[in-house]
Image 1: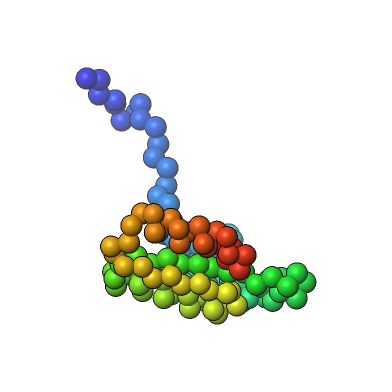
Image 2: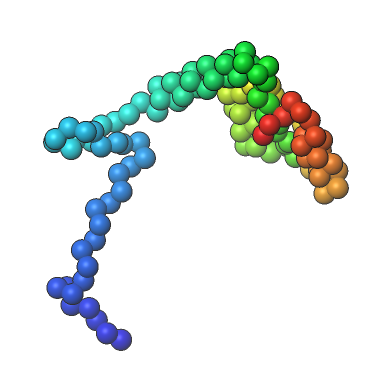
Length: 122
């Protein structure tokens, strides 16, 4: 096995910044902590405006379908938050809850219903 001498090694790249930190554009390159909640609020406001324009110009209301299988609390919370976010920006929401015992064929049938539903876009 060949050992690489320290002078032969390539320099390591600097570590990536934390996702919660963003480098500012100042000449001192100081890290700037951003407010994730404020950024998310701004994004949701922008999406809501786009939804209103889409409805006004094309009479289309974006639709989101969720299919929840079983009774996992974490999955139910995830769906709850997605439904809340969809409502906040003005999306139409379709929620389908199926028992854990659902068959693959039954689940596929529900997915196909969502695909065929012109009010559902994702």
